[in-house]
Length: 197
Image (cartoon, rainbow, N blue to C red):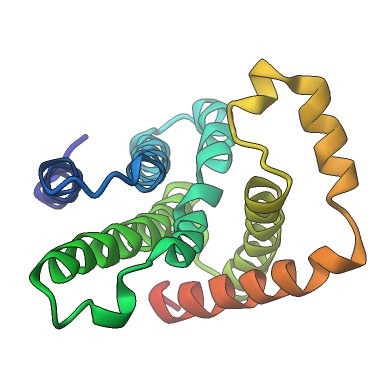
């Protein structure tokens, strides 16, 4: 299950998370977002390496559950309060060198997981890949909006299902459109650059 590449990815996670704890970055939300992104990648690895279609179909919803967190990590940019002097003060530079890799880690985990899903299901036709990328990006952007603005989280599906369902419906409005459209286009752009034709 774990190739050298996958082991290195897990090592990168450990180094970044360890550095955040060591240097007191204090942003546990960022570390949790990295955990969710890593889980999305690990579930995609299971889909890719599974030979039974029924098992893949049972595992894929778990990937969809964690996948939006891979790009949600981008919203952590708003918490970068040290960015104006990041390259001039050592303490700010260390935080910068932890936050940026953490954000890149989440995005790259998402990109890699999409590629693994395509390989796992044998999706080779580029037009179908673009359709899946577009729908996945729209779904993910809506989930990111809900997480950021409706203050709902993945686990709320299980811990507060009625609140979660209410939040889903109340989050659909015209004011959410620019965020969802922007994040959708951003994800499509990243995935088109990264995923093979």
